[in-house]
Every structure is written in C-alpha cells, then in structure tokens.
Image (cartoon, rainbow, N blue to C red):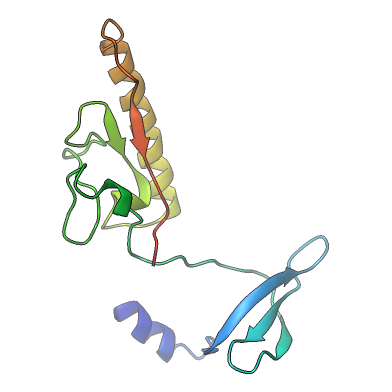
Length: 142
C-alpha cells in the first residue's frame, strides 16, 4: 500500500489502466512500447527509453506446499542466515525465500549462498547414495 500511494502521488508516473505492453520497440535500444487497450483493442506506441518489469510480490511456491516449510505468506522458511530448508539437501533462495528485501541484487547474493551451501552439502554427503541437492528459486508470482 505504501508503494502504491507513492506511485499515485508521483507526478512523473502516469497510471494506464486496462493496458498491456504488446512489444518493446527499438532496434539498438529501447525507443518505446507498443500498448494495447484491453477493453477496446486499440493500440498505441508510447515513447520510452527504459522498461521495468514488475512481476509481483507473492512468491511462486505453490508447488512446494505441504513439502517444504513455508510462512503463511508463501515464502519458504530457511535456517537463520542460511538457505537450508527443513528437508536435508534442499535449499531456497531469492524471491521464494526473501520476504524482506525482494531485490535482484539480494536474490543474486542468496543464490550464490545456496549454490555454495549445496556444494558443501554434496561434498559432505558424497559417501551416501543421494539424488543430490536441490536449490529452489523462482520469481515472484503476483
């Protein structure tokens, strides 16, 4: 709600309801976006120099429901300051685990952590017959 209020109050942001981006226009760089009105079907081109894709704030973790521990909000639960989940050899990182920062840079960092933790887990468990470590990461859904 806070981010929404900021966007509405920002004079540099124009809300375009019932509108979807059909394609990004430009040869060597972004020059605009082709838009389609979802009610009338009318198309238009809006000149822009950048495109930011917002995919939502709800983690895409439905496939782990009942398997991995998760918060009521859908984020996977990991050990404090770690990426290990409640199942040995399964690690979670990025948007499925980070309910606080939700930034690409922190997702990349936790992805690195998960990869290192998975590698260490595999080394420590190499004498066992295991299917290997699993790293769960997915983009936010809605």
